[in-house]
Image (tube, rainbow, N blue to C red):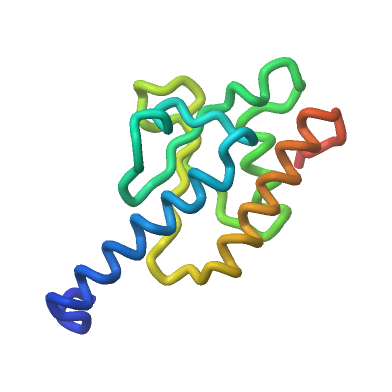
Length: 122
């Protein structure tokens, strides 16, 4: 992978991964809770927590399973350990904006369904 991209290409894919993660982070502002969003841009991963699910009856695991039902690989859950109920999303450098927008739309829909009591349990 590294050899096929070369130095310039490797720099570009790294920058694209960071751009995609920040795009996801900012597009979900106000939808999912991001404990470190106020401290500035993220690197290659967007970190959220499950506090938006409080009092909904929907667990983080339910939310992850609902992502699978929507056709998406679920986020990394409960890591890093310094964030309770961590939900770590790592979009790759190869994700097109249209794909990210569709993914963001699915997360928005699932979060709204959790808040309004519409089942997201798998």
